[in-house]
Length: 289
Ligand code: MN
Image (cartoon, rainbow, N blue to C red; front, side):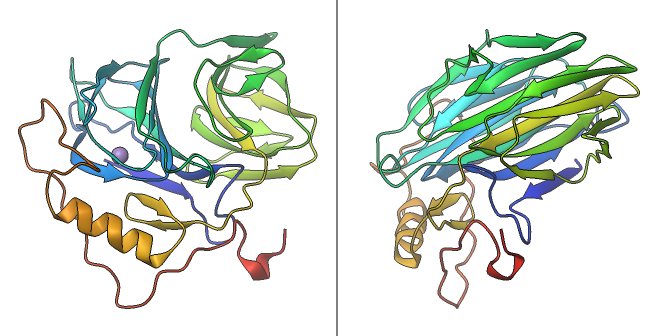
């Protein structure tokens, strides 16, 4: 399955607390795309699972079992540690979706893990443009999903040959990613393979669509804590990452538990690099910003 990883980028490593963006599918011909991600651990983040097409079943070490469909949100807060698996389910159709991570601030990253499924998210419209709010708020339309730092995430849908404006929080930085169709953001043509970073101090974003388009809007207050992202862990120091890796490698334990209902193998952690892992700022230092 084609996966386009657009965050972290070389220069822009996070947008608000959003620190990881994978856009996958749709794979053609139909039937070729199946997701089967065996049990694996996470620390220090929230995973956001969002689909445009297909069905995915989530299982985790808390005993959560949640099937997501397009328009529904799975939000898993790993806190100190959790393990989960994700597999396609239901009718075989090309899977199309995004897998996103939100970094937890230091004050909240050691908490106990929890899982939320939201099937009824708020929407906000500007003429033919319709926004579904995954996280945060757009013009008073607030997602019920629990968050830990100022953040916004929304799916924007435009019909063919339409335009719309979405209000933005000027204290946030923002980025957009084209998920389907063809569209421009403030006149800039969007590409499915790259995140368009919009910077901060914006009060609105103008979108136009040629064909019907779906655009992902991500933003938040600039995340000022340096992050160390390695494999499925978000931490702050080499020792923390080494510790998390060792605890996962040791087998089922109090920190990561077992993915209840999954009978297959768990993912093995890759070898650590021989160099010391270092936390990095949100921007590559030479890139400014
Ligand atoms: Mn995961």
